[in-house]
Image (tube, rainbow, N blue to C red; front, side):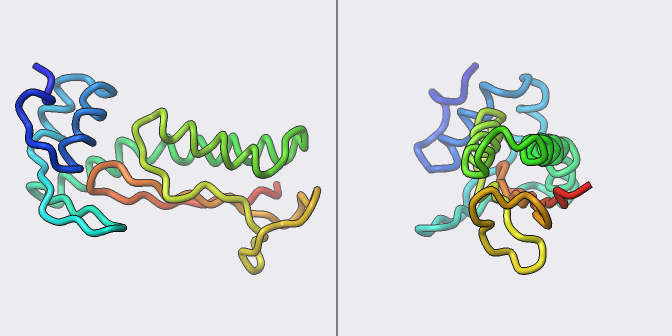
Length: 145
């Protein structure tokens, strides 16, 4: 049974409805259904999970997608066929399509994290931060081989 009919209307309830449509029923019932929203501000949603094991499971099982996205960003940057802005936008879209709420997917200068100019392709790093439920996953990858 889809959660939409059984849950209230908190922000987390709406997130759970989307997650339920993207993961199998067993994973959803085991790992997502026991979570609940405890607080919300303008820029943050606080969700409680039953244990640290739940938070670790979410990180372990969904962080690989973030790293794969970083690899695709590196390949596209090195190929030079797309603008850096397009590469960033495609990475964010891929994360959203996988059920994440990206905070950012960015390509910056590795030495000072400023935005590269023009066709600059050397000395760069790809950075991603994305949320999946209560977990915020962060990863980065140097783009120079």
